[in-house]
View (cartoon, rainbow, N blue to C red):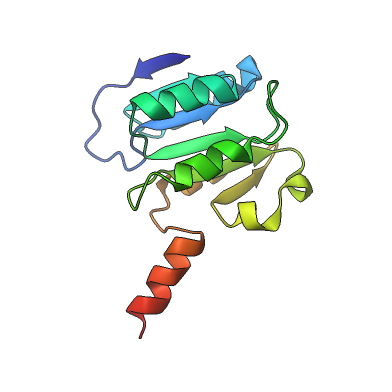
Length: 145
């Protein structure tokens, strides 16, 4: 697991990012996109285990998650754990070449980007402050009453 910091940018809205990707070239590309897009800090984890360790130690604002990792073929287990982090949980971006393999209930937890995707799509998803998922829908239903 590696963590690199970017000099402070007053306009960054991405926040601290966790990239969970087992392809080192793609991980570096995603890291560069996020750093160039204003993320002040990006941590890269290449397995489910290192991602879980990182989530235990650090509060992230966004998690970019490859759902088919070398050590597990259901990377959404990390997303399910992220959902347990409370109301200030990170935004989740699923990064996959096979979006049909993600169960619909899991897709609702975040944004799904199909590989290959444009850097702008990643940045837009990382900056999107709207919450998705069941709890966000419930909060929306309650506040609209």
